Image 1 (spheres, helix red, strand yellow):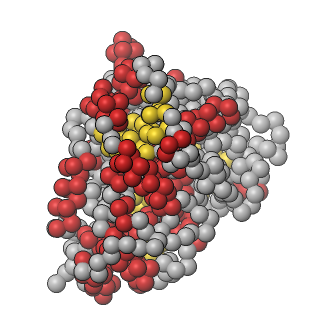
Image 2: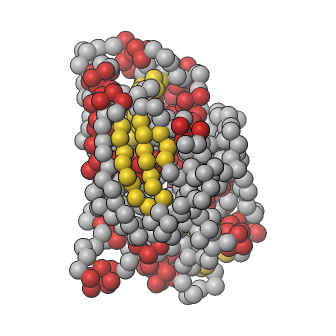
Image 3: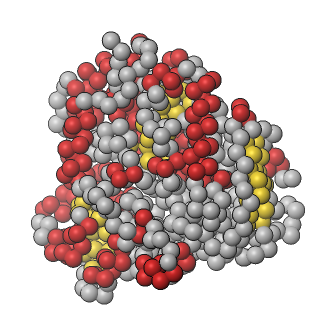
Amino acid sequence: MHNDAKRGLVSERKISKDAIALGVDRNGIHSLPEEKNVGINDSLKMESFGSNRSFITILAKDTEIGFSVKQFSETKKGISTISQSAEHKNMDSREHERVDGRTSRSATSSTNMNHLENSPWKNDSVDSDNRTATGIKKMRCNMPPKSRTLIEEMNRILVRRRASSRAMKPRWSSKLDLEILSARSEIEHAPLITNDKELYAPLFRNLSMFKRSYELMERTLQVYIYKDGNKPIFHQPILKGLYASEGWFMKLMGQNKKFVVKDPAKAHLFYMPFSSRMLEFSLYVRNSHDRTNLRQYLKNYTDQISAKYRYFNRTGGADHFLVACHDWAPYETRHHMEYCIKTLCNADVTQGFKIGRDISLPETYVRSARNPQRDLGGRLPYQRPILAFYAGSMHGYLRPILLKHWKDRDPGMKIYGPMPPGVASKMNYIQHMKNSKYCICPKGYEVNSPRVVEAIFYECVPVIISDNFVPPFFEVLNWDAFSLILAEKDIPNLKHILLSVPEEKYLKLQLGVRRVQKHFFWHTKPLKYDLFHMTLHSIWYNRVFQINVRK
């Protein structure tokens, strides 16, 4: 077996030793943030990866698109899961990654992973008529939600939950709880700040409270990272691709010396470092339509740390947090992690996301692990001739509605379906964003989309059309200062709404986009107020305002 496989590492060709252990890329579909299909040249050439305590075997088939999971066995600390064999030629839903397994004839390359794709099958985007005709039950992601929570109601929910904590009272008291309570008092009585050299005041709900909270986090916060759990599901960050946010946080948190402590008795918060992406890739049996084993795997993990340590049981997990970007994370963490602070890309209130406790994590599509800020920026406001732009796949029920109303209807509304694969198409997509005043960000199969962050990167005002979606860092950021959030029912009036925005307001929105950029950047060495620190701060901030103490 290849040495990397023996060490439990997944290798990607042409990635240096100090780069990411596992890269995710969408060759051929770079131009479409939600177009989740592997290009025709993508392949997975891997036989196995594991370690002396855990082992995963994946057999590559000679078929073009199939592979089978022969066995998964995780035995460390009493956790054990066996994944049934399953061969397939088609994957069954939106989140399932296309894994193109071709058997390698070379022993030296048999364990190399060229691409671990983070996309569903193109052919799985079946329209509702076809599903009805074949008698297949219509998937939830292809149907409008039964209930809708709009941004105004989300604001009201946040205010209510700030006023009264729903967190479980600890089973026994701790001086660390008193430190957090003291921090809360200081934040609530923060000195008034109207202008700051480092922060742009309109971006924040309350600049004074944010500034004071951030200072207290830097001075006070201590985090313990559980060592339990085996690679590749635990402790193995993915730094490229659609789900890179969870990997970047895992990597940077693990390297941090300011906030991380080795003694759990000194910790205010506890981090459970698993990858929701690798959980799905490692354990999901293709075509099974059954994700129960993924949830059970995490339940076994929480049972293990509850038995081994006393901290999870003290608060029911209220001082524990996770960071997960895969669409299935809300399901995987339900019940056994119900009271934990969940930092999720799929921030959907209809799937259990709790405003005021959970954090909406920006979904950042990272194309280069070495340079995550490559090719950013855009034209000045008066040099953007396109009113609105969208291009992408027809995932979900909403995007076809957008195209029905606006494709080829108006020269100022550049609304397209999927662009063809290739570098030229990728550059065309980016140039469209850089030349547009507004970038349309409609939901796909799920409420979240990397287009929101991409619009910010290219200095295009994001227009979010996704009912029930809680925008990133909702507890601290004022999204009205740099975006438009519209109801799905507003699509027929989209152009009228955009044209009705006064020029002065548009210029303020565009300035807000440029000023908020730095809060959405990953850095190999974290900087103050960057995406790593914003994520950690929101976890800290929500814990501060949700803590309950035993009197």
